[in-house]
Image (cartoon, rainbow, N blue to C red):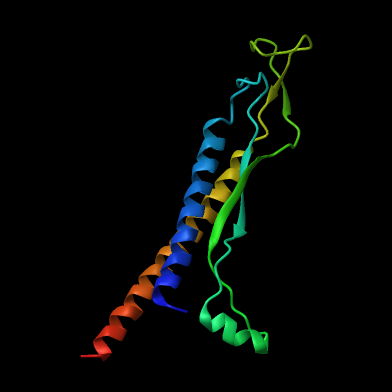
Length: 147
């Protein structure tokens, strides 16, 4: 695997985790939004990751005969989906969005789950930064060998 491909894989992970963190912060900020443009409470959003398709390299063609293909090309966000778990019903008769029984439909966002997801995304982001720094360090050491 080339140094540039390793950097590209880590960079794709950085981009995907950054988008994931953006969605998590959007979910947290809308945890109390009872009415959106659609007229319903806010629905939690989740990023779906998938492997990026990479074009096969020369080494992949050579290793095809031994079935030892290593086709790593990074990750990308394939789509952003809404979580269709049920809304929470809270009794609050003074709320403007309360129904005739006094219940308000609240978003399906759980702050604790979002915070755990944020920690996970942050750790993944840090791991990709560490991989980039290690790759840069290996490239610099390789250049020093030639001196």
